[in-house]
Length: 438
Ligand SMILES: NC(=O)C1=CN([C@@H]2O[C@H](COP(=O)(O)OP(=O)(O)OC[C@H]3O[C@@H](n4cnc5c(N)ncnc54)[C@H](O)[C@@H]3O)[C@@H](O)[C@H]2O)C=CC1
Ligand SMILES: O=C(O)CCC(=O)C(=O)O
Image 1 (spheres, helix red, strand yellow):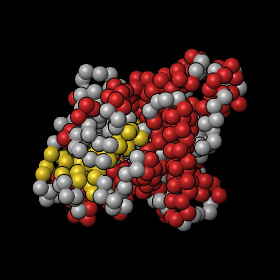
Image 2 (cartoon, rainbow, N blue to C red):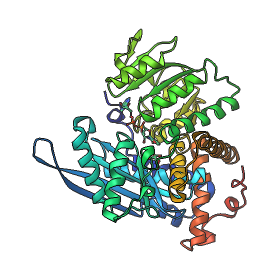
Image 3 (cartoon, helix red, strand yellow):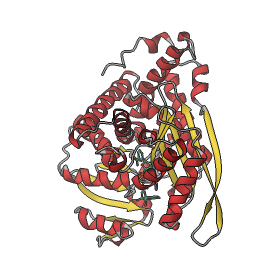
């Protein structure tokens, strides 16, 4: 059952949702409507269609998008999603979340995102390669190491990035590793990038658990989605002594209150789906979200937690490894029920942070060890987490709005410095805050 299509009673269009999130923070900060209007639309959206020769000799035309939201802080940055449900509005929203995500961490990037409407699970490896190359050729005029730098997202991976960097390099007549991050190590990928989204998420969870005076040891965890973000988060939390009681993927969910064993679980996923794991209970996908756990990690798609199921969410902490898993109405309900939501633009920012490190390493052509990458990541994630908590306290709001407030301040400062908007566009109250320092 697809939870995305289930939430019928509220507006679950991610583009409308991100605009509501911007409005909420802008209102508290006292930001001028002019600035808000700039931020509510991507600066540039490219819609492409490109032909791909399939293995049976037929030609199929694929559609895709690349959205560049705002480049006040630097070149736009964000992943590429291959999924049958990709829409232009979704890609626009994801690019907007990228702007705020990069800004909350303090990265010198704006936000971008791309998507291709396809189901990679139905493509052969050769077809997947041709789709990847076709898409990157179609958007090649828009991207570049100092323009817009793609990376992996749902159903794309380092191999796909490898094909893409090769196509871009051929088009440009020079090897250009810094145009794409999340590449295989041999092509200039960074140590630690593959684990970075999950690792960053875990750093924020550890901060939140500390703040709540709760031990990590034996804390119970449910993870929705067992891909790059969810699977590695489960593994890292298990290493910290947590009990992973439930996980799901698109095919099903398994539950064991005594804790799932990670190695056999991973073997099941590698050979198909986590559903094959011999757990005492198989549960419906939606049930996982309602388990009584300390930590719930939505790590799949948008709109997992809506007004429909939010009243039944029992987790103490919801750490959003996914982008946009919680609707604004659900946010309100979770907040009323004292569920601490670590928002996507903060919780899953580890991926883009190590992508930034990868880009830096590519530009200087000198590479760091994994421990160095992880330590730098920890420092940036913890610093950002503390800034967000401070902002949320100062403005008496939740962590999501706190994160948007911190982000907005950086973006607006950059827009003022560039001369796009006037200083009077921000109220005296917001200028007087000291949120820039942790
Ligand atoms: N890969 C990255 O570096 C980053 C990913 N994210 C976000 O994390 C989320 C997951 O992305 P990845 O792990 O990269 O994707 P992935 O393609 O590696 O894995 C996605 C997983 O979600 C599962 N899934 C799909 N629909 C589901 C459903 N309805 N219920 C349960 N499971 C479902 C799939 O079976 C798969 O296990 C997305 O929202 C993505 O935008 C955010 C930041 C960075
Ligand atoms: O690594 C990156 O550049 C972006 C990752 C991404 O798409 C995301 O954070 O949602």
